[in-house]
Image 1 (cartoon, helix red, strand yellow):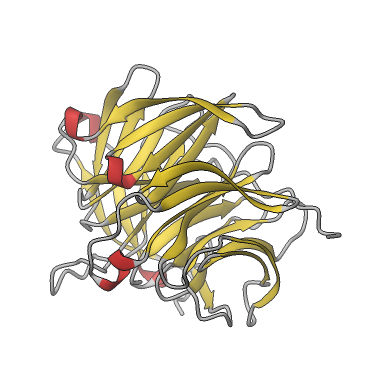
Image 2 (cartoon, helix red, strand yellow):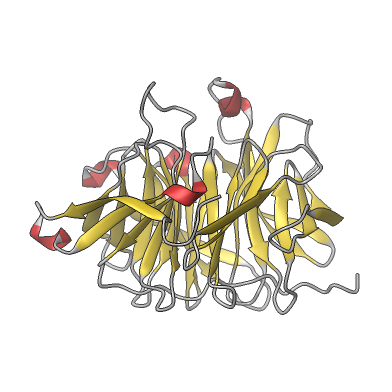
Length: 327
């Protein structure tokens, strides 16, 4: 465990591009490397970052001010697709365990416990798993599935995943024919969504009360804009720009979804950039997760957690799940 004050090192100042003047990318050494870092979520009341090592099924927590890093492994021995805290219930999280959406209790120190399963996707065991998931501004959880073949180094079955929401009756399917369900973000009555296999960011009109989606359209296509890699996780800033992790692209990009314009590119030392999340006291620090699953031998940057500062942008508080816990 890292002692206080040694949380950051390998600072890289981006000064070649004038737009990157003052931007620093720092490796969070306290966290170490993981197989497949995903799902970062900042809990403002704790000033702490949570994220998962998806394939290893490990949940991580970092308190940046002290440099303290802890982790735990749920007893299910399944993949851990996402972690989202429950509103007004400290130490309770909704997580994706294999094909289950479950309620998990963890105080950030001791061993965690699975309280109960809240909903499940019915499929052949081992064929699908939950991937990315987040809560919308109404506190409704959204999460998508994907083929597990890619986890074994095999080309996945195309478009067998789906996008779901968590309702009182269990999981509800909204979108079919998904390849790799990934990034989610919201602004007003718009939901932004990434199916990595499609190589683009789409937008839906969202009816807040019912959660119904309509009017799907593309707002940014990576290949058409000359961006290498595929879109993975994403977040949104206070003025509505999207910050998108580029898997196999070694960068995070900033996009204006209303104009379909590429605004900025932030190089990251690891090639497989998986997700992003705003954090810090002013929500002006961008935390970036990466993966080591496809890394070249000797690439020590792979699978590390990074913090990017000096961007001149601020994020929004992460939404939490509003859950009827009496059920």
